[in-house]
Length: 219
Image 1: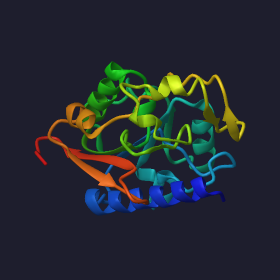
Image 2: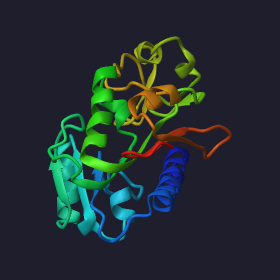
Image 3: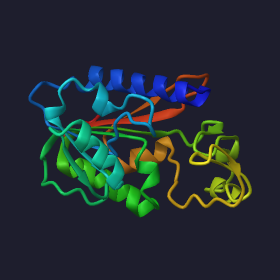
Image 4: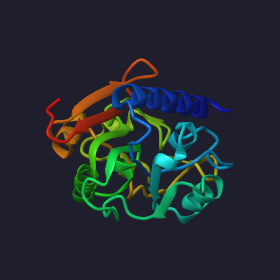
């Protein structure tokens, strides 16, 4: 396992532990994992679905048909669906908890990110949502230092010069990262009003921002 995989595994486990401590899910809670994945040949670290003790409580949605197929094959008791995080196919207040790890930065522009946040708060009474910290001095998708400090979303243009291609396992030129819009603490405060923002770190500065919120409760 490489250094980035080890870092990812540590970060995911800490997020999961924090989720359990803060959300304290009961055996009766219905939980939705937005962007749900499971450990596989492509994703070699344990995911939320793998770590949670009772998969019968879980539902999952992912835009990737292959990811959903893998979940269904491994955990047939999970209600796993292909779908858009900005158009969740469940009624209001259907879930007790929504969990989403590093998805909101990938759904598109400001309007779609705000729509995803609105959908999360619509279908559930509580939520635990994580995303990379825009101001951390290393961008883990591109695997480049300091590019997130460029004005506006300049890192997207820099990716056309040099960017790490995860599928090829090397740095390449000319990539377009249209589906990446990194968020700040202020963005999350706007998207999720009256929610608590937690800064989680594995290294010397917080790499991850976590939104924890409940309907009708100011944090």
